[in-house]
Image 1 (cartoon, rainbow, N blue to C red):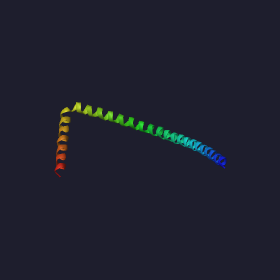
Image 2 (image 1 turned 180 degrees about the horizontal axis):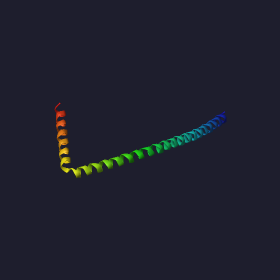
Image 3 (image 1 turned 45 degrees about the vertical axis):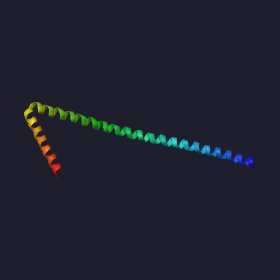
Image 4 (image 1 turned 135 degrees about the horizontal axis):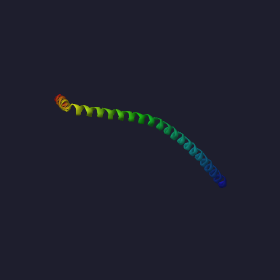
Length: 99
């Protein structure tokens, strides 16, 4: 009887081991599929973000250059305008703190 129990235990161990191997292979396949999907999504998104970033960067550089040329052309008015914005911002901040 003990021999039958040992044989049953060995058979069960073998079956469990085989089932575990099958599960491991299925997990590997699933992981590879998920990884492939992520790579596809990443590559499609990164191309769009890169193009948008480059466009925004170019616009920012153009805006900076235009602002710089205006400040160089009209330095007094630029200074007075910046001072006016500063006074306005300060008055708004003080007013909001009083409330």
